[in-house]
Amino acid sequence: MTPLSLDEIHHTSLLQRAASPAFLGAPARVLPSQALVFLSQGRVAGVLGPGEYSLDPRALPFLGPIVRQQPTGATLGDDVFWVKMGAPVSLDVSAVLETVLDPAVGEKVTPKLEARLSVAVGDPVQMIQALGGKVDEGAVELWVKQRVNEQASELGRKFPRLAELSAESKRSEHARALGEALQATFAPLGLALVACDITAIRVPDHVASRLRLMGGTHTEYADGASKAVVAEGMRARISKDGQWYSGRVTRVSDGRAELIWDVSGARSEIALVELEPEPAYPGAFSSGTRLLAQWPDGGFYPATVRVFNGTLYEVEWADGSASWLPPGQVKMS
Image (cartoon, rainbow, N blue to C red):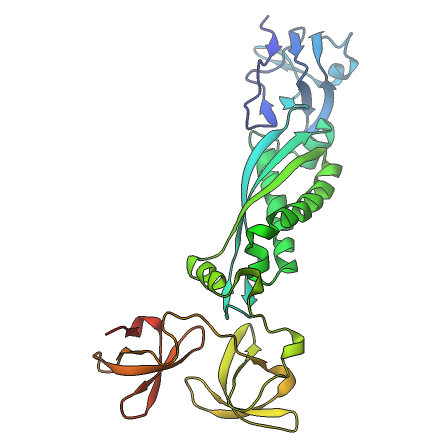
């Protein structure tokens, strides 16, 4: 009778289904780095550690209740799995973090995390039961990646400032925090986290470039203490429903400021505590730059940049009027 054995579990797997059923009376060989797990009706019926065995209920009583009579002979249980014990498996994982509205960037950004984990099996019974009967090649790895997504999102919520979240100097700190959260999640489920390394936290290229220009972790963020520092003639902004609205302050009086809002040109009064100074966004063209801007007729005409609000350029035409234009409608002459 063909022995039940497996020379080596695939190097990227923690769990591997046996290539053939376990037949009653067959010899079984379990290596020191393995455990052999028998499943019946979606639950673990028994586990064999390293050693040489005869699959006989007289020697292994847990086999008796799971004998199944088949046309090809008596088999044991519904499924048999090899579990890699001791030796960790390296997994490359990625996760999409919570979308954040960073006040220094002025737009919604969805960072992406890339990490490498080293995971080992501590208790094969706990691990298989945690899978809820969905035991198959890749099931553990998929489960691990789902947990990483959950904990990475939580990490992202703790660091809404993109410069701190994506800075290489902060990577080891973030990896420790993520590792501690994953270890607590894995432990009751029969898994052990051996190592956690964040290889990158990525943001779109134009955002990364803007953060570098602003000075990395020294980005000009508007904290609570600075929100009241709004004076006449300054540019200021307010956040409403996840979006930023900018304008120029024309008057400050009795704890309120009057603003002329960008694009619409409408005026309104806002409480100073709701406002903050607008960061100096590093647009491609600074204030005072002479360039060509697109008029509604489609042609490009001379204009001067007044300001860049992080999304649009305000340009002044030769006749003194002004327009708000996206970056694609301004260019050097």
